[in-house]
Image (cartoon, rainbow, N blue to C red; front, side):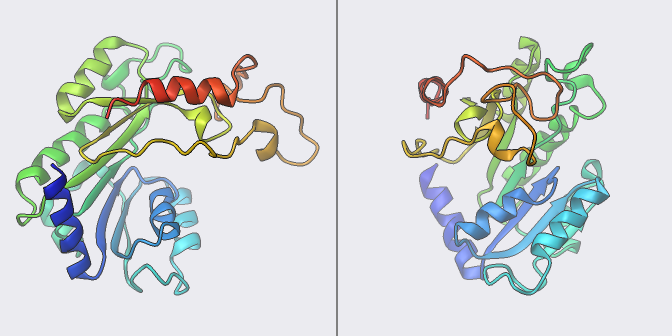
Length: 249
């Protein structure tokens, strides 16, 4: 609902900036994206259990030199499973304008032998994220929730079907090679409209992100975190074409 999203944006402006909850936040990439885009951020709750990732996030964005981030705007919470409305209120992150979710793909990806899908200990967090989305859809002080979730395209069709049933919006399929040095199918779920990818998107190659002296075995990695290297026959043009064909909204 574009009108509801517009009203949420207007509410964020009236509050002095958006309140963002980033579920399985990692090193705060979403915050970096928002700040580089010039978005005023009143609160950013980084929900992350990896202490090292949170340390990087604080190092990047926790200082006083972020003009678009409130001085006390960056906050942290460790246990995603325990996040609730009372805790969001206690942390001063209420109401929520944007709920981001980048839950682990460990047991959804074909890179892991014997992956068990959404029943896996990490990947089941997608269910917790969707449960929080459902709560905030109806209990968010009258503010319409905007949400965005991303994950790998599951190996098992049953997992993708369950993900769609849980989040109740269609999936947008894209190709990671359009944006980065890895070639991998991704799924995006959101109640916000997506713009098309600009034709001048920079082609990031695997070679460009390696340390000096290292030599890439192909232009794109099959998965940055795996030892498998693939994608020799993929080009940025074909990756963009595949991505564009899957942009249904």
